[in-house]
Amino acid sequence: MSTEAPFQPRTPLALIPTADKPQTAKDFKSDQEVRWCPGCGDYAVLAAVQGFLPELGLARENITFVSGIGCSSRFPYYMNTYGMHSIHGRAPAIATGLAAARRDLSVWVVTGDGDALSIGGNHLIHALRRNVNLKILLFNNRIYGLTKGQYSPTSETGKITKSTPMGSLDTPFNPVSLALGAEASFVARTVDSDRKHLTSVLRAAAEHHGSALVEIYQNCNIFNDGAFEVLKDKKQAQEAVIRLEHGEPIRFGLPAEDGLGEKGVVRDRESGELRVIDVATEGTDDVLVHNAHAATPTTAFALSRLADPQTLHRTPIGVLRSVPRPTYEDQMADQLEHAVERRGKGDLAALLAGGDTWTVAG
Image 1: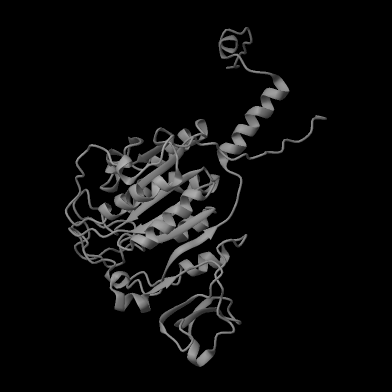
Image 2: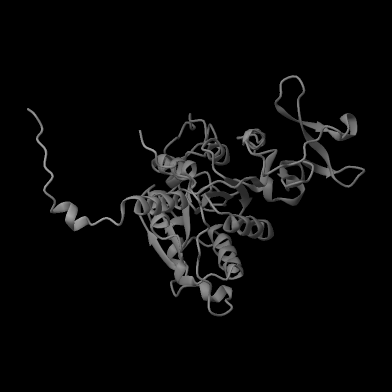
């Protein structure tokens, strides 16, 4: 039996070099022509990312964007940082290797609902459960845009497209529910056209040490125009959008007498499930206060299920979960350091030229 002390990871934060001078959004714009369809929601997300990155003060050569396949995956071309336009669905896997090998980098993944949740679904959930220090931006337009309008893993049931002329039979994925189920340490949702909210969520994701999944509702004005109109129209959005703020009561709808939303989210005392109430008739005593830092994702998951997948009414946006958890690469680095302390530095050449052999019996 070994008498050595058990390994205890120390999980230090990665040290990312800072820029040697103040930066602006212009510093993050590449010399490439942006080639998305006019009016595409991707433009808004690109502008938001280029606009807030200077706030981080990181050296551009220590920031990298990795993408898969799809309209959104052209993103790295337009960022004046390092980047890789990789293969279909594998961006999280490639980014995992990069983040694990280079903890001095800020690694971002840009993907879409098709790229991330169809062929890339397995890679996505494992990156999240491992808590690799990645910022994953999932552009969700509920359609396949690059390949000209087939239904996607997030398209609503009954969606009529070129590939489902009689309506989709599939139950759509809820990306934030999926991420919470995979134990992601940071999960949020925002909308492309709400620049202020989008920027605040991106900033929170960037500051989080660990896997951060940000679902961005993004309009495809060519193949699925108006998919999120109920969340964007000011009048409709008051009733459809639940804005989550840590430490604040979960209220939405038209203003009640106290100036907050007329509707509230409570936990049913009998079933334990979340439900929406009218505060004028049921009061405010039981209205939940949002806790994004709860140790378990139970309530965050329940909140993510409030939205109607067909109409998008009662859609929560904001940070659903943000909790500290040791990252994969920090723990891996600690293991490697511990191994060197115990056994000394390895010699690959000596290992390959070594005399140890073995015979496999037939």
